Length: 207
Image (cartoon, rainbow, N blue to C red; front, side):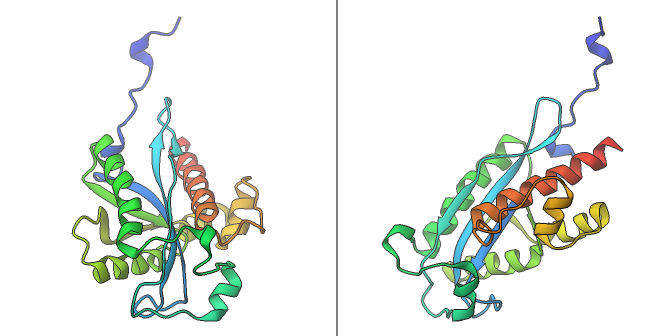
C-alpha cells in the first residue's frame, strides 16, 4: 500500500500563475476595430483543477449582446459568424447586462480558488481583450475581474506544442477534433480553446 505521505500535494491554483486564474474568453464582433465595431457575443470558461491537480475546463458563461449605441457593424463579419442581429431567438441583452453575465461567475471562480484576479486566455487573445476592455469602458463597468493587459495566448502555446497557430488545426493536432459547422460560435470556440489550453498546460506540467 502506498503511504499517503508519498502522494504529492496538489498545488492550488492561487500558487500556479502568480495569483491569477486563467479564464478562456472568446468574442464575436461586428468587425475588427474594437474602438468602432460592436461586441455581439461573448463566452467565458474558467480553468479548474481535477482531483489529480490537472487543468480542466469549468462551466461556460455566455451572452448574446445587442450592438451598443454608437458602434457599427461590417456586414462581412456577419457573413462569417452567421449572427442575425435582432432575431427573437438570439436572446440579446444590453452590453452592461452581458458583461455582468460573464463577470459574476468569473469573480466567483477567482474567489473559489483564492486568486487575486482573472487573466484572459484566448486564441489571438489581445483581440478578445481589446473588445472586452472597450465594452467595459463604454458602460463604465467598475468590477472587471480581468487583468487589463496581460494574457495567455493559445496561438503561441499551440505554436510551441504542435507547430500550429490556427485554432482548428491546433485542436486537431491536440486530438480534440473540430466541427466547422460550430466554428465562430463564441461558446464552441471558447470551449475548444479551453480544451486546447488544458491539453498544452497539462502536457507541460507532465514534462
